[in-house]
Length: 478
Image 1 (cartoon, rainbow, N blue to C red):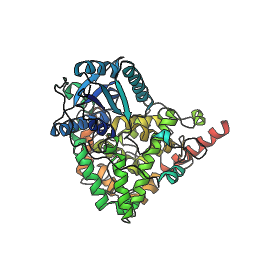
Image 2 (cartoon, one colour; image 1 turned 180 degrees about the horizontal axis):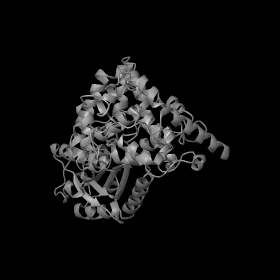
Image 3 (cartoon, rainbow, N blue to C red; image 1 turned 90 degrees about the vertical axis):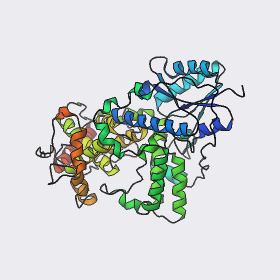
Image 4 (cartoon, helix red, strand yellow; image 1 turned 60 degrees about the vertical axis):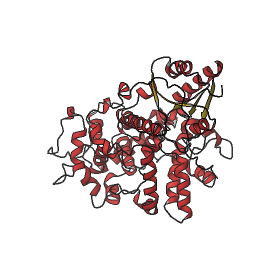
């Protein structure tokens, strides 16, 4: 049994450094068989996150090969799912254990619990490990014993907590005497739904553990000092740009936390704001664990009676998706999404507010569209962000706080650099990025850079009046 392999079941943890699960397996001295299972949860991903996952798998597989190891890819689709794929692997390899990093979404937790129960019943060691968040959600409680429903008290309570150091990469991953078979990634078709958009998005993706580490270093060396101000200016490279890497575990939040703490101790004033954002990410997972309905239903149940439009075929919804609302700041952000697979956080707030308040559309329409288009898609952060914008979530922007996209543009894009970069129809000599939008979008939309720019489908002033009227009508009913 001492020489029996351990199967490391990889998830969103495509890194060697600070990977508690992989570290523990390596410390045992046993041969390690890294495995990724392409299951129904992966198959259901939207086009952009699925494509980006495929790139993470490619990069991590190459990283393992450089260490004398390899990544075994198997399909695990259908009713038998992960367990149906793991059981043959256990028989083939005579592995004595399966280790994995924890997931926090309800469906993934149910899958993992069923796998753990079945494996233990058959005499196989099954262990799960932390690593995707700073604090395990069940370890964090308010003074009264419940979970935090407001961010600031959680931040104040945890900001001074001494966290364990980040783990180094294992010096060696022992290989088994015989490797099991693996399917080629192409069989899973991770980029199929992206079609021609993949070529447009690819140059903007920062793929793999090495790129993530470099990006963090660059941010802390050159941008963190001005982060509190520049993070709100979408035309500037003022943020860490690590969201896609954190989502896929190409870097850990603990690595970011310790590096930012070191910067704070050097009196880099922006480091505190960055640490706060890392905790905000933890807050999203904290809420997902304790109130999983946040992913699909109004977190505040009283909002179930609000008269949002839920018709995804409505012309206003299509105009919003296309970046053709006639409101330049909104449209610039939506086009950035198509070309880069990401959207600046200030843009996310503006497009979210415009959809849910100016257009009175259900936040779940936006949530599903982001799930289709974001390469940094994260289930917990996406849901919390949308419910924050809509006013239906925890720690939310009150519904009567309606972001005015015109005043927001004046404040955060005064020189129009952001809008010029992304909207071809409004400016002479469009930028390459603005033209790339027309290469990325579906041909069926029939849009081109010489089309006239539309008038606003709902003006900033009229949208605010409609939103407040709908809010007052709802309050009278409830």
